[in-house]
Image (cartoon, rainbow, N blue to C red; front, side, top):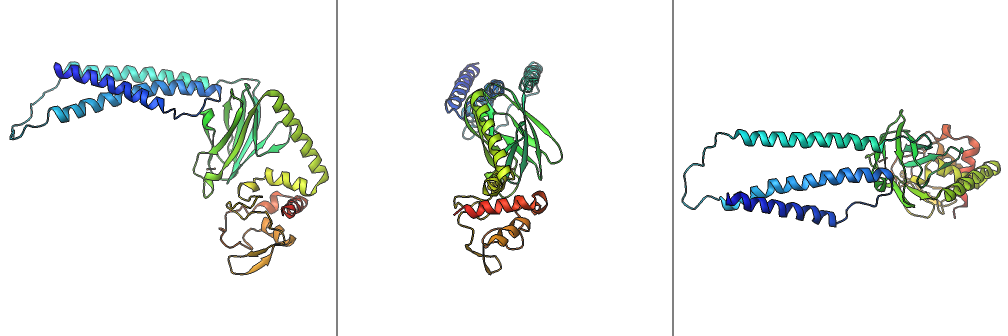
Length: 337
Ligand code: CUA
């Protein structure tokens, strides 16, 4: 009996120390969505049970190892125990009830996080190796996700190539994005701030670079941003040239692999590229003139830059983009001195 009391007290101490010790580390990011509160509530309940089970298993194990260690010179057999019906019923019924309660709470929480608001803002998300594209209901495209605070948004997401996943840690909810299918992601941002969406499905060489800004603002700031984007898109399309090229490289995800500030990503930077001498993987050196830039967009494998992998850039831009769009992009790259 003495052993039971000691172990019981130790279980409670280890349980409390584990739970409060780990909770004090504050490993979770802030709760930035209405859904994150439900998820964290559920997670916390799970965590209490996990910490208790940890203590319940580890403490008797370690206690038994130390206190009931075989005495020196004792070679007798251990005690033969036939079974204990009461104990077996207890350790079957209690976990059964616990699991059923958690099944109910889990289903309830899942329903809460998926609750539909008929006035939700709809934004289309296109994922590709390795960039994000957001298409807004007003008809413009951005590689930043701007969201008004306290309004539910539903993201209709699809992929152009492999499986990706939309994950903003502060929103908690995560959703896979599949080619040839549209998956939905509902979220209600509740905290103004700047976050980052990351791809959480290993999707190739630059998976870890597949991020985009998520900016939660007031409704007024959101409206102003939308208006500025609409105006900019109209003006750029009308004018053509470098301004339109800049919008296009953002829209088509080029900036996921090519920097404009000299930093090395998956592909060569565009800064200072125009008219520079480029060393190719086959040992030749060519001048990055207009024809070279056009060719590198349309047939990226024709001249592979030394030190960069082949067959990474999509070979579809020759058909996806019109000739005048390609010219606008090239004219934009030419401005990056
Ligand atoms: Cu897309 Cu990882």
